[in-house]
Image (cartoon, rainbow, N blue to C red):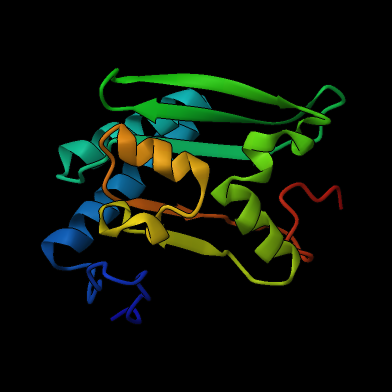
Length: 168
């Protein structure tokens, strides 16, 4: 039996991959691996992932995935999936945009700061409907005004130094 996996606060604890939740996780993983081996694009994988989460009963309102890249023009790229549009909006982030106010006051900037301080895979959870103290970033206030009730974000680091794009 695999070890019990840690869950973020207030989230169901996965006890086994043999229960209904565990089987759905395995099915999603198998789908993602098959599609990746088939050559699906990041766009297709992220769209399919979000669609499958919603089909599985997750009340996903918006999803965002991004990564840094080693590119002379772009610092990174990302995808925003929105349930109301049932669509993905791709985006590219240029070098120098790391000083833009939207980035400097974002939850993701806070996660990057924590990762650079040595925290491995930092996460942030906010119950937006619980009050203004849970909406401590401007974008969270905007999400709440648009109807969001919860926010969860996590940064995954790679490489020996935890860099998002490590050339070694």
